Amino acid sequence: MEDWLLFPHPAPEVRRHANEENATAVRNWLWAVAALVFLMVIVGGATRLTESGLSIVEWKPVTGVIPPLSQGEWLQAFEDYKQIPQYKELFPDMDLAGFKAIYAWEWAHRLLGRLIGVVFAVPLIWFWATKRLPDSVKPKLVSVLALGALQGGVGWWMVSSGLVHRTEVAQERLAIHLIIAALIFSACLWVAGGLGPRRESSAHDRVFRLRATAFFLLALVFAQLFMGGIVAGLRAGLVENTWPLMNGAFIPPADVLWPSDPWWINIVDTPVTAQFLHRMIAYVIFVVAAFHLGDAMMNAGGRARSGAVIVFGHVVAQIALGVATLLLVEAPYAGTPHLLLALSHQAIGMAVLAVTTLQARRLLNDLED
Image (cartoon, rainbow, N blue to C red; front, top):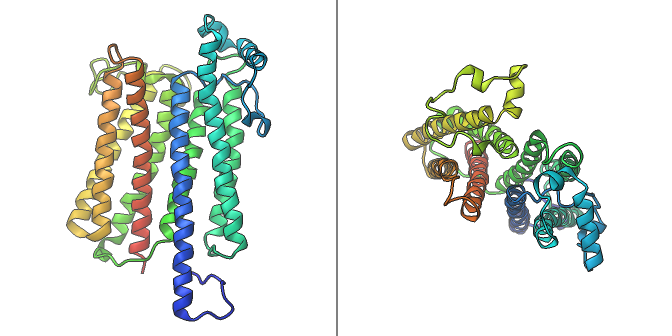
């Protein structure tokens, strides 16, 4: 790890101790940011599932922190919502109390986004100004800050897609919004993991394969999160609610999966196709995670092995939750119980991203020469 210039000519022991303290402080800060992003994704999922995302029809980055406070302000906000297609076509009977409920979800989601920006930017400036950041992580953290700024714009770009000609946001924009959040979350964990001490591993003769499967698994998880966003945007989880077959077949007919031309448009526009791809990527993740686990159990030890066990356990739990969410969509599981199940599925999905990120980072740390 690079020396951090805290004293003019510090003794090696003093410098090492200072470096370790600084690394711990920066690492804890990034863990806290990652935890807030995790919470942000869950609140975002609840906002989507409760049809709350279009309740605030304008973007005010600063003054939007304050919600309506008077009865007149609430009535004006409700009138603004009544002008969009979602109210007119889906909820024409909604009253002010119902509007306040969905407004609360979207307001909390946006407020949490602003909070994350402050919690990231202010300590970043302080750590940088007091020379507590190693030079190697500075461009990475600036990139994360830029992603956060981009995410705010993408969030409004997503919301704006549902204000004129649609009753909900565009599913591809929703998926992009989710992926940027996942990138920010993973990047915080990656940088934090890189600030830990280097440790030797017993798997030096298997470096390439262990790293390759860990990074391939991480890429697959990102692909799965993107498809999860598409599935949520299309409500594709409400079709073909059987498992392991879809309408009596493991692989539906081509004319069912690819009805539109060009074929690739079905990936983001056809619910059955989106759900099918979501399932298939899950199966591939399971196979790769199982292979990585077997490889680590036979050829590695220490953190490489325990990390592989943790990754595989999370993958199995996520698949089980996904199947349960799919099968239990009908009453008596509809409503709040199914909402909690769906949010749990999303939460474990982010947990899978966390453990796969840390496993890849761990292997890069421990197996470096």
